[in-house]
Each structure stands twice: as structure tokens, then as C-alpha cells.
Image (cartoon, rainbow, N blue to C red; front, side, top):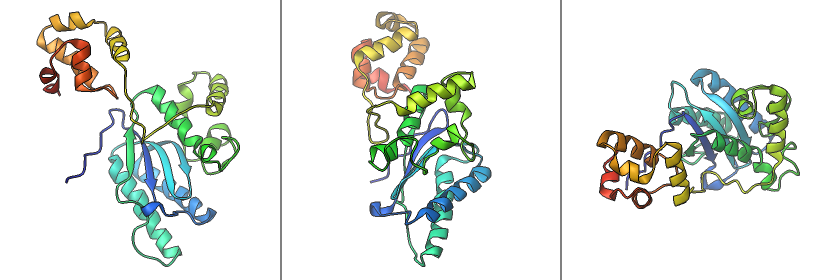
Length: 250
């Protein structure tokens, strides 16, 4: 059975998780994590991607990253291949280290961007490896509050405020908030009321949508289809337009 194609982000931003094969350790000691960060820094220059956050756990890595000229698949291939070459040389081993196919999810709106940013920074805390979000030295959170090295912090902080001092205060509060953030494995499902509310934002009701000419109607239906967590059956139920019509819109 062919593999499902990786979803393309409209913003170019992805939450990526690279995991050790069979969930094995990929970092035996701190030197390995430093080596991975050096690799990340080197290919950030080569591939010109933007990096908004990272977290290095013993058997996996989280990245919040924006592709540039190179697609995300090539970026991750460069990173993983280079690090595995170094790792195999150090430990006198051969073969794979990472799972062949990395996990990714698109990040296409500011609210979810901040959710992923917090999820990545809180990963060690939620795993019981630290007692506060500030404690782990293997996440990028210190680059936000101390000295920037390889992380692009302006996008994230700018979502809180244009005033840097205000943004930093709000960022610190947000990063420490208790939450039930779930990313990658979590499938978002939208309620009918959320879809109806989005229709209102688009300035139209279900009955008005049904009366529109085909071009205008299909333009709005396409925007609805692009909402994360909606189904064709649900859109048909909310809009009163048949599933076959909605299914043909791309």
C-alpha cells in the first residue's frame, strides 16, 4: 500500500518529530545533543529554514520549523543524514538511527503556532524530566529569555505584542500555563457550531451560501474544506449542500 503523501503547509511551517528507530536512544550523552544542535545550526544556513523552537529528548526530537527554498522532507533528510554519519563514526556503528519517515503536522494559524511552541518547550516538564519549563537545557526556551543562538524568536514573540517587553512578559506567562496541549498524534475535530461561526466570519449564512452563483459558492466551500478537523459529511450537514458537490471542489 503506498504511503500517504505528506500534507503541504500553506505557511511553510511544520511541527516535526524525528524519532529513533524502534524508539531507541538517539542521544547517549550531552555531547551527542551538542552535536545535533551544531548540525541544526549548519543546515539552517545551508537550507535557509527558520527555526522557532526545538526540544531534544533522549529518543526523539521536536522542531517547529519553516521551510524556504528546500522542502521540509529534504531539510530533515540533510539533518538526519549528517547527524547519523557523525553518530555512527563516534560509536563505531553502522545502519539507521532514525525512523525512516519522520512525523510532521502543518502549522497554519497563529493560535496553533503558539500551542506547538508551548508543547515543545514543555515536553521535558510533561515527561517528568524537569520541574519547570525553564529548567531543561535541551529546549530552545532559553534563547527566548536569555541569548539568541539559532532560534528565530521574533515571530513567536510578535504574536503576543509589538512591544518587546510586553511580549516577553506574556510569553513567560503563556509558557508556564497548565494545559492539555496535544500535538501530532492529536486529531482536531470541529463542532458544527464552530463551522457555523467560521461562516459568519466569512460574512455569509448557510441559506445565503445556497443562493450564491457557483463560483462564489465554491470559493467559500473551498475555504471551509481547508479548515482543520472538518469532514465533507459535516460541511454538507451545516451548509445544506450535497456531499457530492463539496467533494468535487479542490
